[in-house]
Image (cartoon, rainbow, N blue to C red; front, side, top):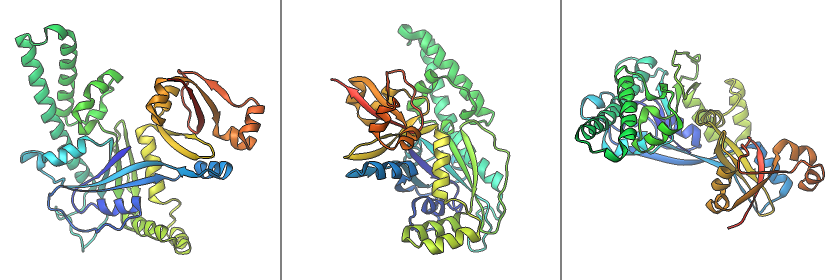
Length: 363
């Protein structure tokens, strides 16, 4: 999973990036509209992986991972002056979703470009840039479909072209009404059709209101599908993350207690990212490796097998499966087998969060 951290200049994107990645990238440096990107791969720390590692004592332990990118170059008004740059648009289109950082904190040292802090105004400004970008793509395809149908260019697949035309007309109407494409209840087939277009407002979005250390959390009515909202004290969270990276647990616990922080932003945002993207974890275990894998909720056993290796999906016979809590309760695979808790599941089995599987296959 690859999520892009986006927002207007001086919103604190890089501060949040550092908080999520325990990094120390320079902050407070506006890129002046120039495209630039920082990338970090973050382990999804999962207590279940640690417990399984203690049980199997493997040679290697591998956590699931999320890639976060801090994307600079997004400027207010870009849609009215030629649109997003090609480099920026290409990068944004290739992401699975967004962490949209919105400034709420006040700072005399970092003045806001508009002269005042207004979270709703800034939130809507980025939404508008993305909607204008999508509208340009939709209008281009719409024109091509209309012209092609008039010329008879879709003789062999006219019905499919007409269905696609209806979909793009619906998207055009939605964007023209200044609503993101996430508001459409698209079918799986429609989502598959649109996959290659990289439409920005179709991507799941986590909105992070970046508040000051002493500020209360804010609430803004922003109720869209595939959208979650949270508040973070960006600067404080960055400092806590750096204490964690340095292993200074005493100072970390003291500051977390002083500011009533119950979990680090890394853990919170990863949890919300999984919820946002509809993801869950399953595990493979053994003497060689204990490993966490990520699949969509609702994925079947063959999809899970393919996540491990394409050959496992091609030659899938069955999945030997046990729930994590059953294995932990019984204490070993041998006891789980004796208790009849190891199940033999077929291709249509729907994976559950925390399943531990061993794929039987033949190719």
